Length: 252
Image (cartoon, rainbow, N blue to C red):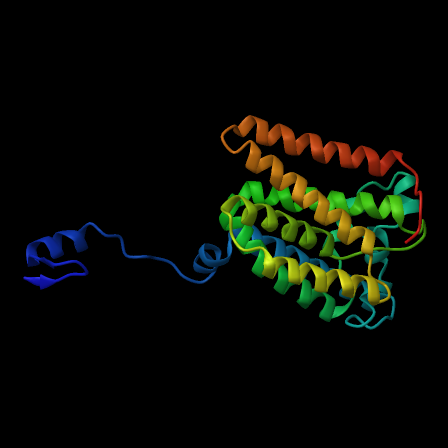
């Protein structure tokens, strides 16, 4: 007999069980995808690729590619500048969330995306996670359109990251888990947003609210996939309509 976790098993039973068990195969990207989430890693790759592209673009006009990538023509064409969005350059609502000002900004945001994104992707699955991510981008962009200076450029994945924090809060509430750690993290980040110059408070809060709302739709309609799709689509469309039609009403 062979000792087992509970009692004993005969050698034949052990061999039969081992024969019916698959040995994990693959490594590298496939293993990383299983651990961290394919969608999360893809978003990180896109952000890194965009930083490299803006750095190269900056070098073509004589700017330092690392410290002044935001001086590049590509960065200027893709950053969210509310007045230009009002003039019809709608793509800036999304593209700005894939730009970063310098390597430190990129690294900090990508580390946060790796941690929080992988957790939320495990909780919701790939496509629902992506829905939350992009609705959060639109929520942050809409808040920037409403409450930021018309000519102030805004860029960074922080709008989506705050949305992920809001969505994780919804998940923790549904699972009846402790919220104190998440609340502490949010308070610290909000204080940093308020105290450090150059950070878009409106974008962060807008992303957070959109993340909470989109996660709420997915949780409330978890047994009805068409309702999940419809609910998140309506939320996304509503945010785009507001961002493109309502003029800036205040400056934070």
